[in-house]
Image (tube, rainbow, N blue to C red; front, side):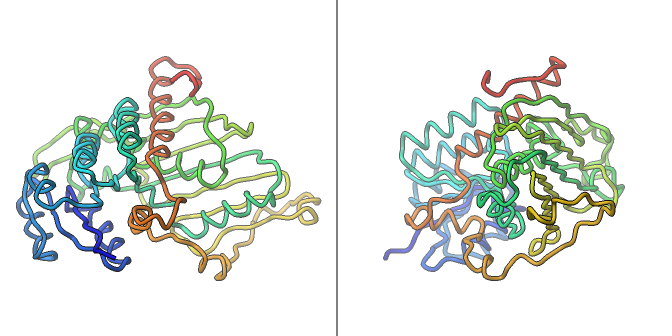
Length: 357
């Protein structure tokens, strides 16, 4: 088997996770590195000295002819870099949110489908063992009819005096703030775990901490939202409540999903990936509970051992035809349409049906 040829467009930040994941698979050769920042490019080239490196993606892609390309740029360039990579015949692993707009996301999926290539979206929380086991419990019908879902994703870095503004705080580069950066993960996690789709939403996204400084200490104004909340009706009739914040002091990266059905409640938290809160069963839930603590259990090791949860390494497996269960461009579009609906709901101050978008 010939080596799978791999390149990355954008080699700093989250690209490090892509490089680590790709290294989990044998016979993958890093052939191309693209970044407009000379320091970032030099650091990546030191790690992969045999790769062709440069600031121009077209030139590097033409020279290296990769089979798989990671797109790890700021959000503004997800769509153009994805389409460029696919024009060169490469499969793509793209960071989330998929694009700046729903129209861009749909165009990316159309290009992928026409070229019959793999399009992978890095919805990394699908790799959390607890979330995957919650999905298994619901698939097996152990909760019965789902009644409610609660999704929370909290961070506390914006507003901290030691943190400087970056591209994520610039709407022209990011498109969104907490809603696109964190909310998009919640939307995908709820779809992934419950198997239900969002059918209507109402909500808002606001900026509560606009005053920041850049790396030189100069005052700048953040133009992306840093807090968002929305209410959704799911396709199975359940109600889902979502909240996300980047201005919640004390929280680092707290992603929590809670699901209640007619026969129980389950909870998973990203910071406790191999355990979950579990109160499930027809006999147990026959009785009302007057003490509100739900016990925590370990996710069965036998279950964890069966899971292909290696992040972007799954894109390698998909290119090689070894897996079909991975976050696809279609999933990216499904999440993006919900974000678009929330934006419309906020502007028009009403419920918005997904089917209308």
